[in-house]
Length: 106
Image 1 (tube, helix red, strand yellow):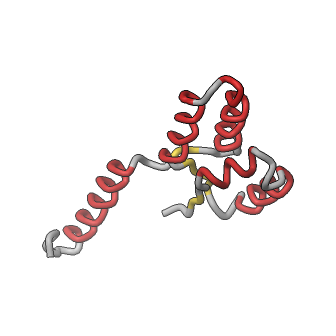
Image 2 (image 1 turned 90 degrees about the vertical axis):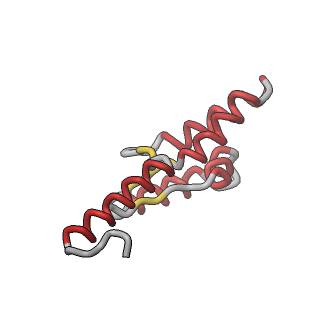
């Protein structure tokens, strides 16, 4: 299984707002490359989209920039939805147990 990393909304917001310097963000992303896959949490994405959709006009560009910081990373992909992850993980466990001749429920 690949090792992946994702960041919470507050990290992305602080990068976008300059609290975390852009140079530091770039350095972190570069150090992750090759070791980890960069992934976006659907929850984080929805929080930022909600701010964009429900925010007022003066904050539109600020909210848009946050969304761009989140997704503008080479190789960026979304993590599976929680339900999809659970189904995949459960199916994988079930398949391993049955392949070993074990009862899937015990």
